[in-house]
Length: 339
Image 1: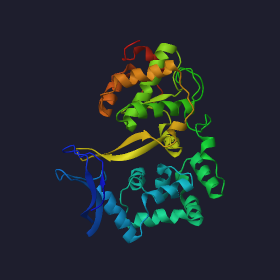
Image 2: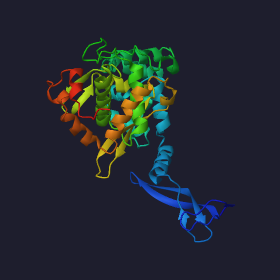
Image 3: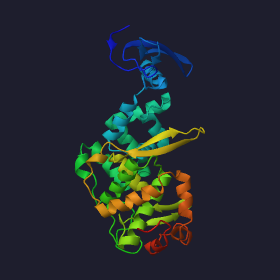
Image 4: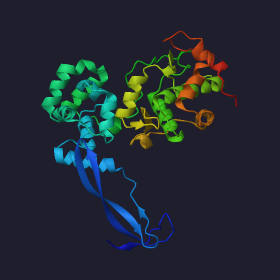
């Protein structure tokens, strides 16, 4: 037992609790991990408060130490050393992006995957991988990895939010871009705003929120918010080249994608702001922020599936051929209420 502190008991409200340790056991792949977790014990009622930590994480950490496996931080460090996104590292290793995401988020890797990722730590291992499987990467991602391999550091803070980021987004000012040249910085700012102001953001809901924001702004201002073009996809409108754009946003730590397990047992992904999101220069005017607030208010209590269903009712999606670019002319028929 250790010293008394002036913390409040969550059960009876008494302010005297002592710090103690509780022994726990957790089975990991047939091995029993034994460890201690700090707890608080109330001197008045005897209630025990455990810390807000998942025992599985502690057990996995111990298992990694005992078996010489890479930590989540080490896996992420290897990837970032070569300026690779989770998607690109997964492609090089023949894994899924969700797998790399899970390992960096604390999931326990198997030994075969651990060895494959560990082989990337050396310059020789990465050079061999890029030679054999570099064709699995986009041209810009391959070049970035090769530059990192050569020792070209490419200070991340200097290239973040570069409007010239290469992707397949149309850049001309036409009705399919809302008469604005696509601006990656503005696009990143809108993505970060939705991640900060919506309760839950998934890839499905984000694509639809972006569509509604751009088309709503065009309806009132005759120009889109980001200059993004949108295609008709089976599950609703999506930004053209959204895969490349998401990879950039992840790599530059504007967003962070986390694998989550829902109450029904299904696995999914949620998008959150990344470590560099707050460093983004301000790009949006008060009028533009008002557009985002209108979209967020409309869909505040909608599930991602329900947002997708709403987008299927929009003439902009319904009257466009599959995979074709959607004309901003359809913004006039948008279902969102006018100011």
